[in-house]
Each structure stands twice: as C-alpha cells, then as structure tokens.
Image 1 (cartoon, rainbow over the protein chains, first blue to last red):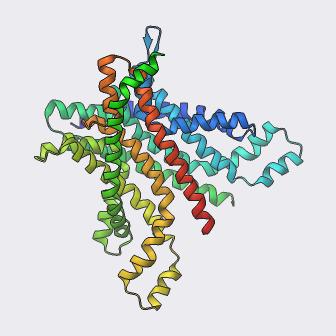
Image 2: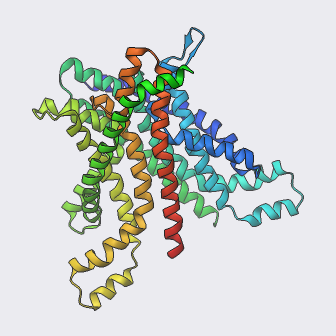
Length: 210
Length: 217
C-alpha cells in the first residue's frame, strides 16, 4: 500500500516542478503587459488572466488532452497536465508579482529615472530585487497549492500519487488507508516548505528594513 | 458554423449539470460556513483539546487536495462500512474543505476586531455570548467577507472535481457528451465558457466588495 503511494511521488513532484517553471515563464510577459501602460496590452493580458483563472483546472486539462489534436498527433497526458497547470499558474503568478511590484514605492522608480538609469537597469537592479522579496511568500504558498492541484492530473491518467492510490483502492477494495496515506504525504511535503519559506522571509526582513 | 449547432444541441444537458454544480457549491457553503465559524473559535480557544482538534481539522482540510478528500469519502469510507451517495459524499468532502479554509479567513477576521471594542462591551456589562453575537462575529465576518467570496469562487470551480465520484454536475455531463459524440473540444470549451461566465463576474464582485469595505475602515 505504501509502495503504491510512493511510486506516485516522482510524477507528483515532476508535474508540480514543470508546471511551476512554465507558470513562471508565462507570468513574466503577462506581468509586463499589465504594467506596460499601454491600454491595449493591459486589456489583452487582463482578459487572458481572467479567462485562465475563471475556468477550472480540470477543464483546461481535458481541453488539452482530449480536445487538442495537431494533425494526427496529440499531447501526452503528462504534457497536457503540465501545459494546463502551467498556464493557469502563469495567470495566478502574474497577479502575485503585480502585487509585489506595486508594493515598491513610486519614489524608487522616480529616483532610478532621475539617476538616468536605463529601464532595463532600473528593473533588474532596483525594482526586481525589492519586489522579489515581497513576492516570495506568495510564490511559495502558490507552489504548495500547485503541489495539491497536481493531483488533478490523475483525471487524465497521469500516474501520480492520487492515480496510484485510486488504482490501489479499486483493485484491493481497500480505500480508506491508502487515501489517508496520500493525504499525509501532501501534508508532510507542504509543511516543511511552508516553514522554510517563513524562515527565509524572516531572515530577509531582518537583513533589510522595509 | 457547426460549433453553434453543436452548442445548441449540448447546452440543455450542460445547463442541467451546471445546476448540480451550483447546488453542490451552495450546500457546501451552507454547511461549511457554520463549521468554519466553530473551528475559528476552536483555534482561538484556550482549552488545549479543543484547540488542537480544531487545528488538526483545519490543517488536514487545507493540506490534503480536495480531490483526495472527495475520493476518500466516496471510495474510502465504504471500506469502513459507510456507503454514501455520490452527492452526499461530495457535499461532505467539500464541506470539510470549506470549513478548513474559511476557518482561517474568519480567524483573521475575528482577530481584526479591535480589543478595545471587546473591553468596551465587557465594561457595558454585556455577557460573553452577547459580545460575540453583536460585536465580534458581525465585524469579524465583515472583515473576512472578501476572502470568503473569493473562496466561494474557488469552491465553485472545485465542484468540477466531483465528476470523479460520479456526481452528475457540469463536467460529468460534458465528459459523457464528449465520449458519445467525440466532439471533445466543442463540449469542453462550452463547459469552460459556462464556468467562466459565473466565476469571472463573481471574482469582480468580490474585488468590488473589498474596495467598498476598505473605504469604510
């Protein structure tokens, strides 16, 4: 029984990590558009973000897995899961990052410009390091949420933890302990990550006054 | 224009499923919010048994994915001799999730009520029960309201997972149409539009409420 749950862990972690990377990459252009000051870009990004967040993850996974065919090729279950979770993550992360950037005081932007910094230097050296610190707790919380949401990949047949637990329950007729075990693994993984992020956050705010 | 022809054909069944999704959301909130209120006070309680029981209940409800709780209730409990209908087990599972998440929001709301108001009520000779009923709970709820509304939207989206335990909600209707007509893309896009048509305005509403409430604080 423990074996069934444990064999699912690598895919659970793999889907989560891959989706988080894709999500981070997707969030940056969305963030840039919402901050650009161009109304058209802003509107476009807003619509993409609202749409991605307004549709349940399982619907995105089904669209990518059952609905999208490229000629005769179709996405693997893993590919569809990572793409769907990654895009939705991109929308949520863009919002987290936007909140963090808006917490950096306007004076920092003005001072950077007054010093004649290029916009690239301003963002890379002044804004991003400060915003990143504010965004970190939200980012880790989202990552833990994503770990749990990766369980949704089981619905399209990715053989991660919940898929394995469900299989075990069906074949042995013993479903109570195996799901408890799966739940315990999620909790065991998320608690240390939460503690770690709180500690990093404390250390960062101790070093730099906000 | 086959999309629109198909849409017209599929829509009645999908709307029937949407009604079940909304019902499941409503039932989970109906049972989950009182549970959350009790848990929020349980966490703040000085009685160690009450405190730790509430903490455990909340941490498990928040730590375990909703999908696992759902499958536990539907596939797990029968092992222990307790067989529930699909709708009942989904309601039970999502009530737990709602109770756990909302307990945290309410706890934040309750601790946002200024201590001076509680002392004031005490000075006026109000009983503890009346203080809770007229001072703490109404204000705590008000502070927590935007987060609770945000959660309700997430909960509505989470009901889509109830299809895995055979509740005939929107996703389950979409899947059965898809597997009999093979028009997966059409039917899932339609289902997505229906979900979005409810979640997106509801999210805007919660942001509006948050701005309104902040103005008065």
